[in-house]
Length: 132
Image (cartoon, rainbow, N blue to C red):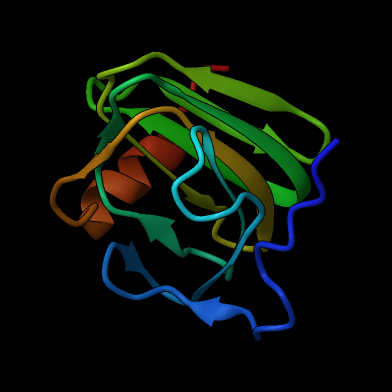
């Protein structure tokens, strides 16, 4: 057994460089671990940039409502208690709904490649065309 003190008393960090809107993140795993695990809180409308994970990503929603959307527009709503697996290399974004916070814990396998910002139009289309 190994007790991980990833946050170790440090305050939650506001994430700005690869997110749009107000987002806070707390590491769950220790630096350098694989998978990398973070608990992330998104304010309404906040979201990640487009990105992909070499080995995939597992997201566990723990509070609120949000969305996970692939580059081709396929995706859907994510509610508290639900999870989603994104295969390695699949370009996607995730974030909160327009009227809800979203808290999730994300397990990212391998390196993450951050791409460009999700435009308001892409966000609105993803919310509108959700198919799950």
